[in-house]
Amino acid sequence: MNKKLILIIIAVAAFLGFGLWYWNTHDGTGADMFHPTTKYAMWAFGLGAISAISLPLGSLAGILFKPKASVTAAFTAFGAGALMAALSVELIAPTVMEIVGQASSPTGMVHDKSHAFYTMGALLVGCILGGLLFFFLDEAVNSHGGFLRKMSTMITFFKKKNPTVNHINERDIVQLEKKEAHEQKSGAMGIWLGLLIDGIPESFVIGAGFLAILSAKLAAGGNPDFSAVIPYTLIAGLFLSNFPEALGSSIGMKKQGMSTGKILMLWMSLVVIVAVGATVGYYLGAEVPHEVEIGIEGLAAGAMLTMIAQTMLPEAVHIGGTRVVGLSTLIGYLSAVAFKLFE
Image (cartoon, rainbow, N blue to C red):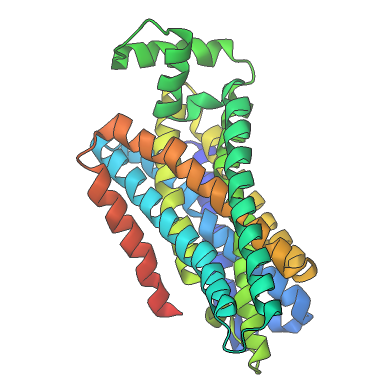
């Protein structure tokens, strides 16, 4: 085991320790020494780090254990199901339930119905824009080497360059990996950007979801502790989906000749970015109007759902076949939903 890998493992352990430290700040000895706004921002940062720490852990698992294709496919489908639970239960369902409550107001007030209409419009427009944003960013990044991060995107790229080829075997993919990794001077950055747009929508949602729960707890009175304001299904869904995302991508990146240290540093940088993004989401969510916040959550949900359909599930089918994908996706979905019991 080289020095870089040891340093990365130490960094991962430090981030895990960081998350555990925030988990225990409710005893009054940790973040309570800060101003409430600063303390809650640090909690949002910690939640972002916890949700994304599975990225380097999944990368380590892929590099060290080299799981079979069927195992990787099952993990990927499981992660896709968990992510679908996170966006449906934590992003879409609360807004829809709120809209239903407003539209069927006992008073029948026009204001209530009008507000419900605008809120639903913000959600739908946000979802559409999020899907389009992911699609075009993904296409742009793939054209600059980002397609190397996944088997499914490599196959799509190969078919575009060779439209007359109907069947693609493993040998074709290996040759494509070596050739394109050599030709794409910006391949590493393209891969990193591809991973970034796969994962960045979650960061704002973490901060906004945390803020929503925190606001409700503060409005009810009292001083909630950290464990009482965690959006468990969202964090669990993101954590469970990030692990196979990194596991599958790291195996391919290693085959392309990238060093273990470089691969893990790419994932660790995303942990920091997601944590910072969650903090920004917390601050931004407190400042923007309600409809704008709903629209941004819709943007993230649309991007995440498009990413699942465009990259995660096709990846699972390509590397493991259809037999393992269906049930693995179902198990992942139910596993994330079950975390609602902690709220």
